[in-house]
Length: 218
Image (tube, rainbow, N blue to C red; front, side, top):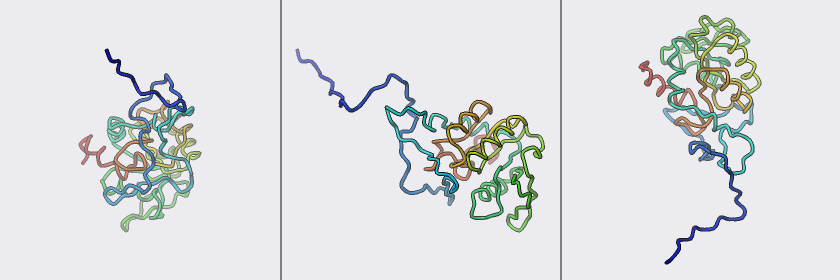
């Protein structure tokens, strides 16, 4: 009788008994940014926070991918009747402008938030800006997009929690593990981390229309 022998494991590989979801970090950051529907979603230039974590059996720190959103999370975010953009900008080269304009282009009620309070012109029309989440009406019916550095994002999330905002969308580059942990513990839906159709993680510019279609808004 012949025994079927399993190939021996390399002594350099240390096995762990921890369960690792198959959806976690099985891909690495692409060498070139992903472009879908002419939109490029990339991490903010103000932070070096990585958005993808390579798969590793010996990784001691929970990778961002463990907080990856799903289509269900995306649908929950877009079920809100109103939206707000923290970090909205009048600079057309910044994602704060591109994300805010995306909401306008899809005829969604959106409130831009920037401490400067200066109006943001889009397609020849000035849009009034509020300086903080406290000025947003009906917070319990408003989902919030963030285009801010991680430290600012965390402070804004704490304020959003106190005000009763239900769901948040964290653009690539706006978070670290501390931000994700806080968001996960305090909001109904958190869209962030690995996933989506782009190569940089979940992004409104790339994944937003799929969310709108899922809730019948497109």
